[in-house]
Image (cartoon, rainbow, N blue to C red; front, side, top):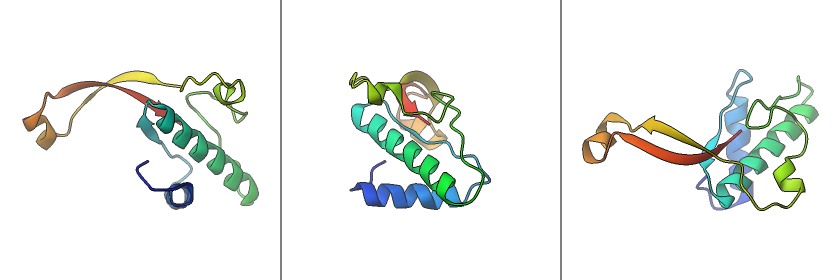
Length: 107
């Protein structure tokens, strides 16, 4: 999330969460910074959904639980990532190869 600080990232996540019907997919580059941003957003959504008097949010991926991330608590320093192939949008594909492999982290 290319926002300058945690407060702006969390305000953006809260705004996005408020516009959903209970489903929000966040995807970030599979780097340490991307992993931390997704973990931050995941924890924030779980917290505000419990405090908001609504049905608590549930995490579906990458770990299908609401517990602390094992990679965070064990200080492994390994971001939770996966490789995916996707198609570039049409106009971008005109300039570059249409099929791309990239590493992502998600919640």
